[in-house]
Image (cartoon, rainbow, N blue to C red):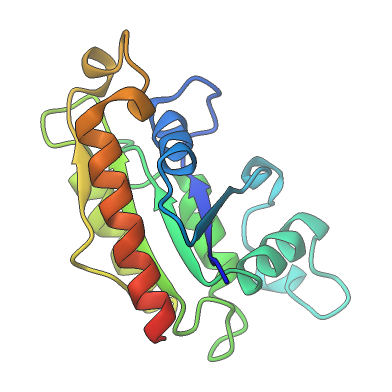
Length: 184
């Protein structure tokens, strides 16, 4: 049986290099790993505890929770906006972290990767996402780190799925996620 990895992309822009990096995970998934890239983060309202009541949870947030509950692992692909993760990823984590103590992220293996225009590849955003996921109860795989710098230049003419170095990094990362998920 394949390990199901749900991928959340922090950039809403269709042509973003982080969306392309998520596509590279689909294209380079090793045998035994099934990747699905979640669509619809932009439809989830900002977290408001007043709306997080049984029978009143917004449909978009309920769909996200259901998708994560069905996954064996979670992968966040994050750009870096002003030194941190995008609001859409933080909002998703906020919805996923509730209800306190019984969230769908509790003990779920999770990893964060990304690419950014800057020279460090978005490491600050990735660190912030790992921190938030850990606080939300996920089993963050700290050893998994893919931060690709200078994305606009590096991927100007080559899609990340066709970049040999990226393809190898992604395949190795997914094998590591599968090992953790199988042991979980």
